[in-house]
Image (tube, rainbow over all chains, first blue to last red):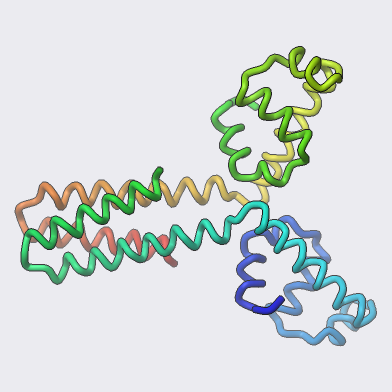
Length: 116
Length: 116
């Protein structure tokens, strides 16, 4: 996978759908930073087999995301909550009641969007 | 499944992981309110086969939720956002700046909890 962050994020969401071996090898590689050769020694399989297993696992995770898009959905929700937090900070600094009113109605609109 | 709402919610989350046939039968049963017999006629299988297929599909969906708990996680997020919305409404009605301050800091705390 191009990007370690993406791989580990997908693993956080869909890792439980993998087999124990897929999980173990994936974690050695992405979380514990073992080399393919080291993992091969650990599991008593060839370097190539490790590489295939990781590739297959990545494709499985990408396949789940393509179907369910839960990483994407959670990310959008987080962005919205971040906007709410910024608005709350704006209210804290506001002295005009008009500015407070406007920030509050924005917070409500974002909340409704999430709850919809 | 005991509860139609739960079945359809699970389907919303994990339905894309089912086969086309599982999806079709599930939708006929839960969304279009067809009887087992009617679905059997539609798909040219026995009433019993329809019943087994639906049971198996329900178990698949429950299995995904047991592993990933995404319905539960989304539900908790929604509860939190609902609390934020209530606090925003409290601010709208507040005249004391102390009450506003307290509601704002609660909103920020909830947002941080979600973003954590």
